[in-house]
Structures are given as structure tokens and as C-alpha cells.
Image 1 (cartoon, rainbow, N blue to C red):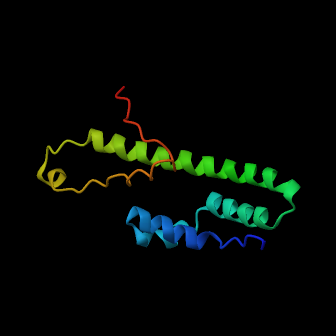
Image 2 (image 1 turned 90 degrees about the vertical axis):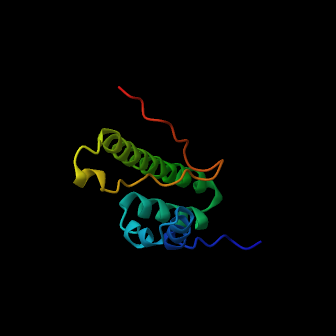
Length: 118
């Protein structure tokens, strides 16, 4: 059985950007530090001795959790601004408000919840 060869994060960024329908976001996302760190750890784990893989992947999961937290915070920020917008002037009425990306496929990613109105 051949060893797994990690293809690096550009291929995953392109796949994710296609899933979200935002292919233009793949290149800028390459500059996200925690994602690069996670990709490097995945590459290390793909070539590490079996006894080291679990520890390397645990550290990679920490970066994944940071990214998931940042994404959720971004969604909450956008939702908060959207909730506060009221088209009281003609300029505001015609403004486009960005919508959050669609939820990941079932069993992957994170669950989306409605913002708690407080």
C-alpha cells in the first residue's frame, strides 16, 4: 500500500470555493495563516511515523477550530449588521447586503443557528 501524498491546501481551497460558488475567493484565502499552518500539519501527518500522527492531527484540529470560530464570528457580524439595516433612505434601500455562504453538506462543517435577539 502506498503512502498518502498530501496535495497541499490550494486544491482544497479551490474545491471549497467551488462548493460555495465563490471561485474568486480561493486565491485570497491562501493568505489565511491558520489555514496554512493546518495544511503544513496535514502534510507532516501524511508522512509521519504512525506514533506521531495523532498528536500532529490534534494540533491541526486546533487550527481548524480557530478557523471555524472565525467563520462563525464573521457570519454573526454580517447577520448583526443585516438585522440593524432598515431602508429609511433611498441610498440604503438600494444597497446590497451580503448573505452568508450556504451551510456545508450534512455531516460536514458546523451547524448554523439563528442569532439570539438580545
